[in-house]
Length: 317
Image (cartoon, rainbow, N blue to C red; front, side, top):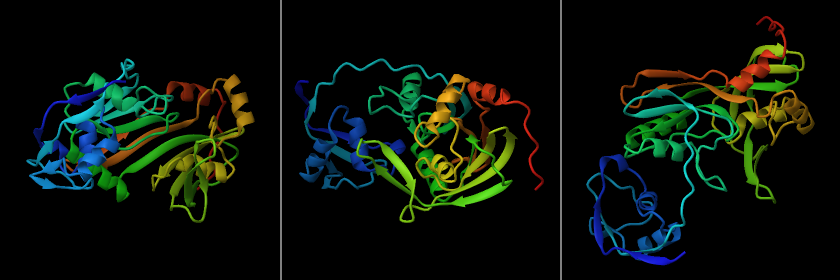
């Protein structure tokens, strides 16, 4: 790629939508194609000024701040691959939020060989929106409810609700085995690491971060149990690792599951992980009213479940 010098010294005024954003993240967004390493260098050198003053990378910008931008050295971008159309459905939308039903197999954002994810697809589809960011994430193979914020104030508010455990999150998971408990609280700390092969992994470890999941039995079929999993914390791969550690791996889980069983399941119609973000409840970031969003099981999961035969009755509470 060729190196270019973009423009001369310019000034940019911060708008309301960018309130409280770190300046390094803000600059990475507005200075398209400029490596973060270069952004950090011009911040350290004082070439970036806010209201005529030097700031460091952690400075949080405010509406009305005037940012001085020097001539920027950047690389001429390579042609971008076309952005795929979003194939899920819209579950809820207003001026502050966009809540979608994400299909399995679609990443929430691009990167690591993935040209585009849900956020890129929705930005491409909604070019009139000045702000659109992911509120949280789902694993690529997990289907179901995903929240996006249309305003920075909504993003900040929902992040605070997530940190304080005020967002109610329920998942449907089909596991291998005969689950006995009507309701079970699982508190097992989780440690995240990168394997020698460069793969992100999570294990139960006493030195890990606190992780709490409440599992409720929904129905049983021979060899399988359908569970409702309520996340009380939001650790990476939390439901998958908790269940695998307890000896009840999720059907079709290719990272923590039973690989021989997964091969058999694929031949009978289940070619993905049976984990679905089914219900989400939260306070609306503007009106403060409770919002409840539900997403029915993905069709391929419902078909597999229907094919398991008549469910056995749950045990008495």
